[in-house]
Amino acid sequence: MKEYNVAVVGATGAVGNEMVDTLEQRKFPVKNLKLLASARSVGKTLTYKGEGIKIEELKEDSFKGIDIGLFSPGGAVSLKFAPIAAASGCVVIDNTNAFRMDPEVPLVVPEVNEHAIAMYKNKGIIANPNCSTIQMVVVLKPLHDAAKIKRVVVSTYQAVSGTGKKAIYELEQQILAIYNNKKIENKVYPYQIAFNVLPHIDAFLENGYTKEEMKMVNETKKIMEDNSIQVTATTVRVPVFYGHSESVNVEFERDLSPDQARKVLKKAPGIKVVDDPSKNKYPLAILAAGKDDTFVGRIRRDESIPHGLNMWIVADNIRKGAALNAVQIAEVLIKKYL
Ligand code: NAP
Image (cartoon, rainbow, N blue to C red; front, side, top):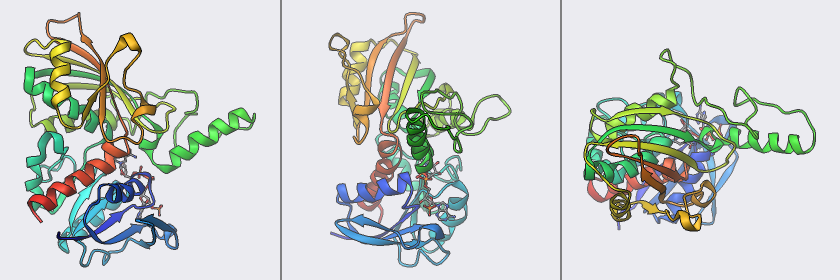
């Protein structure tokens, strides 16, 4: 079997770390693994297949001989280094928002639009969508195929790991401070996140929405390849470490009963239906954490409109929302194109 030289860029971060584990767990055919981060991390090591690999500083000449680059170093760093990597023949799979809405760059969730990966030839870059969008479209796509979606109203309950390792630390420290009666510090979020709920993810825009909310609107249309789907979102940060939860209301053109929807979803890739209210069975962040599937439950009719369903969708934002989706793209890439 052919093996590939792989670089993980932002390897010391929440997503990068998970990418290294995901490559190992899914037995990706890695010849050499290069781990890149900022100068701050030089000297640190990460374990891959039982061996310590030293972190190297990301530089312009880091990509010689690299076939695939899994990037999650933040938007500004990707914007600069992804084209440099691509110019040296490396195919970049980028987790940041730097290239997602570039019409020449495919934005891919393999269960939804695997075929778009072919477009990587345009710029040598494939974009990984925003975490809250990925788990939603995995569920929306089979439902759209069954009854054509007109409109989606989503409210999210997003884990702090979505903001990276500093936010995980901030929630831990605030919980400890509260229990020890110490002063609570907040550096990552504008307010205390422990035992609180913040209706604010990413920067506010002129239209009153946040960037995260508009990512869900615009990325959904691009991935589903259907600009007619109307989406409106409210994105909310909650004091959960791993796993984003979403309340999703979907209006369809044709009727789709909850039973029909469950049947469709049970057959769809990457989805687990957990929906038995009589036994208190529904998706939970703590059960989704560390898992590959996107979980869906609480499927019921929206009785206020002719053809509508409500549902609850949960997935591990670091796995399916980031690292796993990127590695799945890499798997298709080597199977079909490299
Ligand atoms: P994180 O935990 O803060 O990690 C950031 C990573 O980027 C670290 O490895 C950091 O290295 C590296 N980095 C920062 N500045 C750098 C520079 N100048 N040169 C090289 N490396 C640099 O953040 P994260 O949660 O992993 O997220 C990273 C990116 O992925 C963000 O753009 C985020 O929006 C996106 N994303 C995150 C999620 C999620 O659920 N967390 C999901 C999808 C997409 P040092 O350790 O050396 O500072």
